[in-house]
Length: 90
Image 1 (cartoon, rainbow, N blue to C red):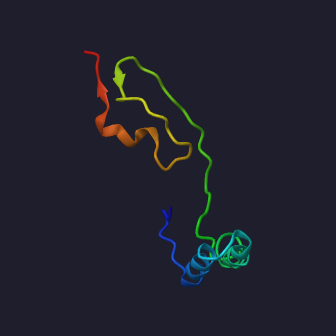
Image 2 (cartoon, rainbow, N blue to C red):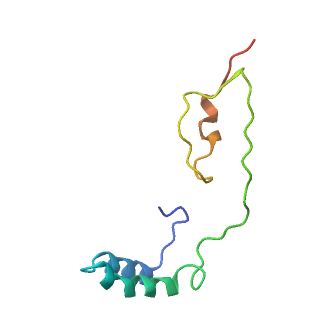
């Protein structure tokens, strides 16, 4: 998952080396080197700005469609199907 379209050729090369390493132990130096360029110590490509509280309202007249397990986080909120919601009461 790369929602911010992060691109750093050095980090990508290290990721490839880590993923193609012959063992988990052999991959650790590559993951560690990548961490020096990516995240808090490097490019800091992701920044957490706010923590939202979850608020759910219930109304017997609002049909949200088929229920499904919602993932935690805010990448796919309950409002993702907003265009399909229907008011069922007159």
